[in-house]
Length: 235
Image 1: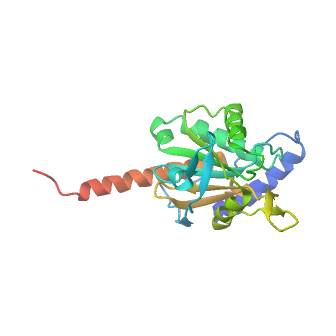
Image 2: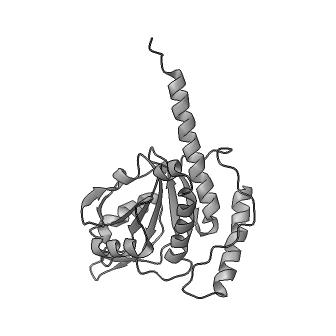
C-alpha cells in the first residue's frame, strides 16, 4: 500500500515538473521513497496475456504470444508521432532508463525484452516502425520488438482484453478508424505469459520497474533451482 500512496505523490511532482519544462520534453520525477529490494517481495499474477495477430517492423505476420513468452517482457502501446510530454515521450524515456539498467547485467538483459505495439495501424505501418526503431536507437543490445496491427478493428480486442483505456474514432458507418486519447500504461509479463504488474503514470519509475524485473528473474532462478533439486538423481 505504501508503494502506491507514495506513487501518487510522484505523479503530482511529475505534473508540476512538466508544467515548468519544455512542452516536448519528458521529465521523470525524482523517486521520493526507497523501493523494495529485488527478491524480497512477490508480484501477483494479474491475468494471462491475450494473443493477437500483428505485424512486425518487416511486415511479417506474427503472434503476440511469440513475444510474451520465454522472457520477462515489458509491453507498451504507443504512437510513433506522439509529442505529449506525459505520453509516449515519457514512456520512451522510462524505457531508455530501464534499458540502461538492464544492460549492466548481461544475464538479466538476455532474459528481458521490450515490446511496443502501435495504437495507430493506419499511420504506424511496418516501415514507420522500422524508422522509429532506428531513430530511438533500438540497436539489438536488448531485444526490442515493434509491432502494429493490420487495422484498428483487429487491434481493439487486444486493448480491451488488457484493459488499455483508449477512445476510438469511427467513420459514418460506425467502423473504427483510429484510436485517440489513450491512458499511459506498461504491462510487466513474466516468462510464462502472466501479467504481473501494470504501471500507470503514477508508477512509471525506472528503478521500480527495474527492481520488479529483477524480482521476476530471481523468482525464475529459484523455481529452476527447486526443480533441479527435486529431480531424481541418475546414478
